[in-house]
Image (cartoon, rainbow, N blue to C red; front, side, top):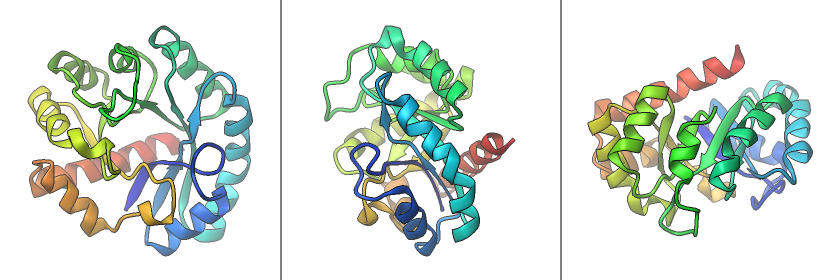
Length: 216
């Protein structure tokens, strides 16, 4: 199991990075990305600290830890600059907080994020066919999420992504220990969104590819 969207006490999560890593390892995860909520006010506080400890934690617990960030509620016109800044600080996985149904994310966020240097557009809500086509063109993964609330639009995201040929990943958006779902629960949620078994397996392969790319 791989989860490329997790949070710690560096934003609104419950655990410090070392405990998140330990709990993920015990739960059978092979890799996680720590992607706390960030904007221009805290990028330089979060990312260098994760870069400093990621390899050591991974070696200690036998799990791959990737330093990352989730660009969150950033004005659309500023997303491209934000993505460039976090890459320069060492973020290996860049997630952008999409237009979920449950938060007042600015309209235009999905499109601006898909034009920027990101890896994953998280919980993109009622993403349009045109936006999904842009994701496919740029190789950006759209997220099927196991998280309550954000998962309300999973079915729409899955249908729209499949129609456009866009890649998908299944992430937890984990904020606490109880959010680290089992592989079987992740599978059930993906199937509940309308994916086939093979399409779910492709989501898993997409996560593997992102990990490999991040480690280069």
